[in-house]
Length: 310
Image (cartoon, rainbow, N blue to C red; front, side, top):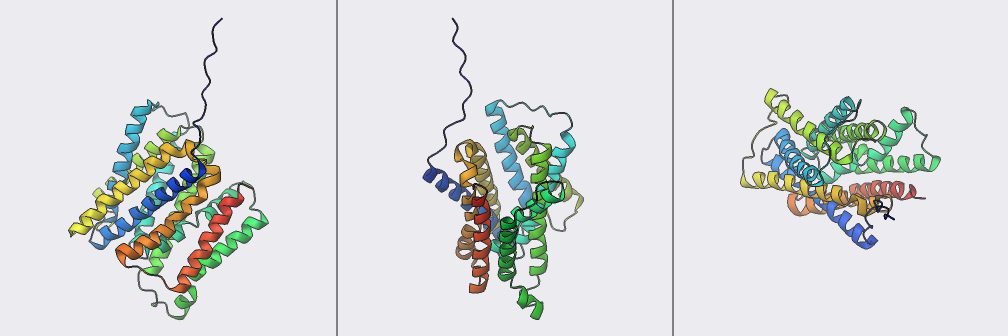
């Protein structure tokens, strides 16, 4: 009598302390990517050039993973236009977030990007999803209050020039980045769920890469492909690409063993790491009021992440 073939079993999750430590380390690498980008931008590097390098290295890493895992490259019927839309939205998100990083402190840009859970919940509701619970709505309100504090809106109202000329555009770009990524996540969940995650990620990064090369070739962003004018600028470009590729690839490979449902809130370490690295590398500091607002935002986001498990 033949023995039944063994069924596929998911890999055992890492011990929780190891999973949390790994996710905090990855969040720090993502923060280092943004701090490195600011170093490159301060040295004259173009936004598009930074994204081309970052997405190019990530594309190579994902392509190697596809080859190693022998994944199929076949697209499912009807998914092509949605996948293209996701790639373009992630391209917009990348450009907007780096534009914010180039204008305002890195930690503030990331806090604005962390309005993503609010924007995604509201977008899902607007497109026919479930309405946010009263508790979730209350926490979202607290997060918005924290943003008002960290952005020092009263100071803006009293003196529009108090925060510097780059702040209004930087804040707008940070919020726009979260909006674009919320749209990409909604499409991924509702229109591309059946598409393999490896292929989806590869096509997304490839779309970002091609879109940025085309934008650079057409000169759509003034100075977008400018080269850095100093050695630290070149080092920033190299480090932003390496930090992002290592963090993205490691996270992607380890996701089955990280128990994301329980441990995802650990990724909120990114703004904290950005605050520390921004101070050590860039000399960026925030006032006690800004720090208090950031703490409110992070606490609210952490609570939202944990409450999903209740």
